[in-house]
Image (cartoon, rainbow over all chains, first blue to last red):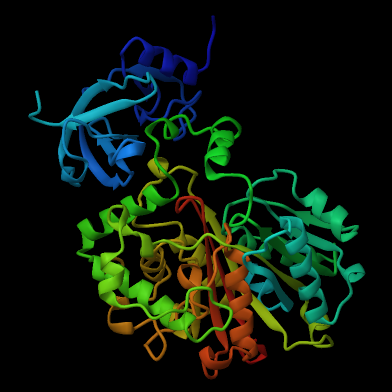
Length: 122
Length: 389
């Protein structure tokens, strides 16, 4: 079935694969997925990001233990040059710092999220 | 060309209603109360209104029921929805419509009963997920708008050395102004220690770094300057207005510390022919304490990165170097969902000279700055008395 880039993105995630786009004309990396390059209007192709990113900003959202407890929310800058929302896992939420190098940890159990973890965590 | 519209239109009426808790009233009812108050304040009748701008947090076709409820037949309607900045951003389209003769009197109006509403935040979030999708943010449960502003604050602290005490200075200044405003909802004394001890909600923002959730409605009326002189109130002229939109989601903005306010401000200053150093009183949308710091920088009141130090020591409170958010702001006066019309009303009152204990002596030039979404849309207006024309 012919689908749009949003369905394709989540289909990749369902197979455990994180993909972003790159413009075949101006070579810009693009996230989130679109039907045409937001910089030049060019045609977009899927690429697999290398996996490295740096924390642009981070917060610990406070929640009662009954509601699931505190959790991290972050914006990370991927090596390819795009920013995305994520959660940094395998570390206490408040221990996440701006500028911290992180690596992709995989697709979340919900199949909707891509999680990152600090570099050096196995 | 924009310069030619400087001072062509004046705000001649302002009104508010349902401030705090409007138990038993609908959004439309308090909106209509504020609208009638603003029209009466101008010395006009509702049938004189032939232009309407409005927007709703909940209803996407909101202008139509407002036309119906108020009994209007407008020749100009604008319901551009940019979040909380909308009611500042509505000025320039209205100025064009008034200047061209498309209409003669524009009513800007807004109301929300989010405090007493029976619709829970959980239900609204669920509906938004479907009707207003952000599939690259929602799955991370970002608790927006709060968490994006928290990440802006964290990044500002990281880049510029801003401290939680600096954020608290914004909260304390707002509270000090609120204590001079009988309409303000949070007026009890507050100390630095209490602000710093308030529970974290999304680090580095504590509960007292966040605006209130209230009911309330606000409205104002614009007419051409030539007609303004014959109406009931001292006219407050719109000297400049500029709006910029950088997107919707925090994750897609180019920066969380340099906002579109720099561009909206430049446009408004250029149209008005003034600069930050000319401004007597500043009303900026303080949904969170970090907002005031970001906007004072982006609007040129201090260099980028210096906002934290600029607000320290009571500099933006009563008796300080620059009066900011003289009603007490969204932090301590009122915040019913989208706040842009309320800061406009406060600026009009300051320039009329009717603010009582919080009045800025000799205020002739005011800056109003609205913010929408998660730092997504920014709209700046410069208002002035006849002396500034």
